[in-house]
Length: 319
Ligand code: SF4
Image 1 (cartoon, protein in one colour):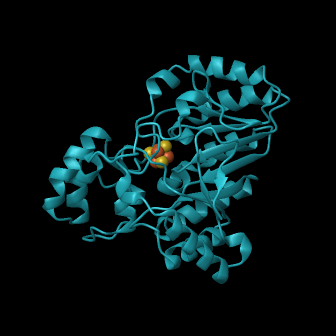
Image 2 (spheres, protein in one colour):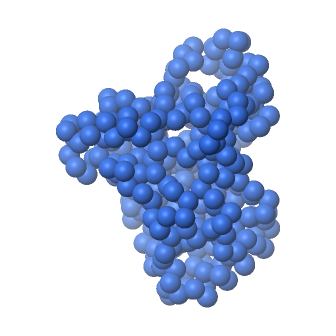
């Protein structure tokens, strides 16, 4: 976490990128800070402003252009708040906002303007209220650790949460949404494995990989370690213009994930959060892409194309 680039000028220098990108990067960095850890940086091609991994992390001036229909809380998560740090959107499961910290800042993030100050506290005191709400609602069979990225918390803090959940008989599954095994694979160490082994319930990790170049040998090793301690690995991608909106990339992504032991599960149409209009892919184009994938891959390698619609009882399947 200490070997992280947070300054636009340092990013451009490290990747040999043209200085004309600097003004926009500095301006957008003010609104949503740049953050990219060393292992992820190493996978970005030097001197290529169109690199699909760079596009996910480089602040651009166009993020600051107001676009109609793009808002701060496109999923109306404010309405899903059950307790400080606890959101419930769908029946049977609830989402614990464990932290606001991430190892990487993804420019398309739908929580880039999330009011974390109201949702999590550094001391964990507010988790108590959230955990209390879970404990007293026996309909909640699954708890999703989210954020931010839950794996930015120490193993001890994670254990605090899962020990509390272990004492709730109705909580049957723990799901962790994280990008850390991909952007900082060394996080999957003995300590993390020990934490997972001690969890009473089955554990599912949902990784967020958008491009096959994000998966290298270190990531494959991290996935293997997670599988070795019994974690089910799923992936959800976001369909992003200029990153993965072509058949060849999506096909290679599914195959690369499966070879790493990760099931490609969801392909999300991007949420319309302010500053991300340049990533948008039309629904008609998304359908064409998935239709093409269907003719080229085994069924289990074709992710479900979905969109999240505020207030809907589940994610809305497009294909
Ligand atoms: S890791 Fe997830 S929560 Fe963090 S910035 Fe990226 S998309 Fe957002």
